Image (cartoon, rainbow, N blue to C red; front, top):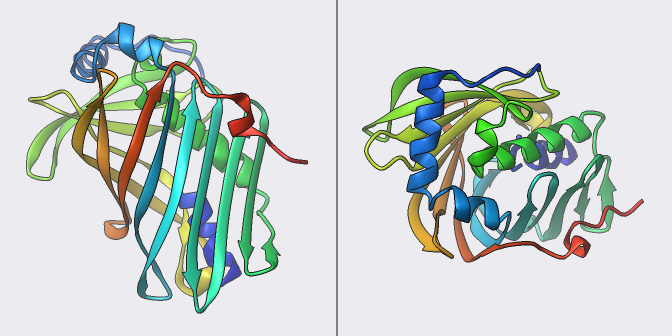
Length: 254
């Protein structure tokens, strides 16, 4: 069971410099306009929201609550709480530049974070930065290329493959061909397998029910699949899009 929660922490999060190819650049520029425009996206570098949803624990859908905060380029925090077999489970992940930390507490017991926690959290932060879109056009931050169009929930989506600087792992971003909105991301990551041990999974996150906050389009529903099977559903509320957040939001305790 301890290992399962490490897998959860890894999942709910998650290279060299090269110029963007023209097709990928055109897709990203359309997405930037669809989400509110470069001026707004570059002005509002921070976001914060509450989460509520379900994820499977030992084969049973279990409710969770939490909140998440991000401030470009490298500050991130996620807190989740749920109850399993009468025990409170608290998951905390935070990044502030090169400082990162993951903690999982089951009842009064601390679960070791695992040796690969730092890299997983840093890749999750890079994913959050990619979803703010404008950094994808900065060759100092991402190498991007166009992929083949794919279907997402029955609609055509343009695909951009992005590799964050300093990583040898790529992520795929799917943009609705009509609206230009970011409707899906995908990457290789970690998740809880049978018996709770962390295993390699292919994680796909689907975004829908967009709303406009401070002129920027943001999703209010997320569905996460692992290896093609539903892993988590979440509704996002109290969404804030801000110019900045207090650094205290991202304190990394020793």
